[in-house]
Length: 55
Image (cartoon, rainbow, N blue to C red):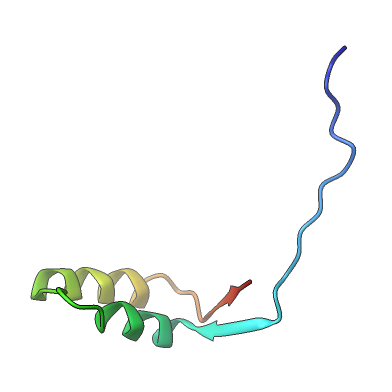
């Protein structure tokens, strides 16, 4: 018997986190060297995402 998709649903959590806060959280982790800090900053700053959601 073949499988069928009966429905697809999404949910948007109520918690919203500004990307700058998440970026700063990543940067504050122990052991982040200069190169890692540059990569984290570049990834978050160039993503063009203002906010993220969290479950």
